[in-house]
Image 1 (cartoon, helix red, strand yellow):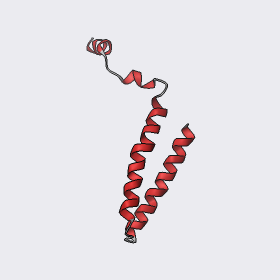
Image 2 (image 1 turned 120 degrees about the vertical axis):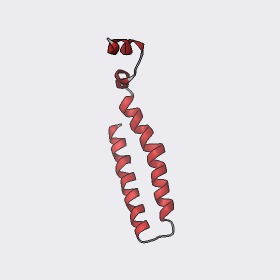
Image 3 (image 1 turned 90 degrees about the horizontal axis):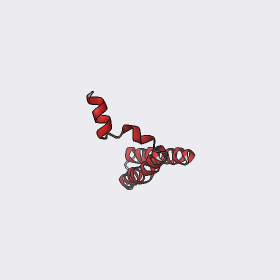
Length: 74
């Protein structure tokens, strides 16, 4: 699964570089390419990354609850 995130990141990074190039040469579809790159990065890459990163419950040590607050106050 980590390889999927790496491949998606590289693809979207290249996509954004092409969009930046198209903006530089003032192509008529440059804004669409950049917009779709940002859209796909936000709605495909980020959810996949977050799922892979936190699927094993490693996030639980960062959640505040009453017990942790009481320990911290002591």
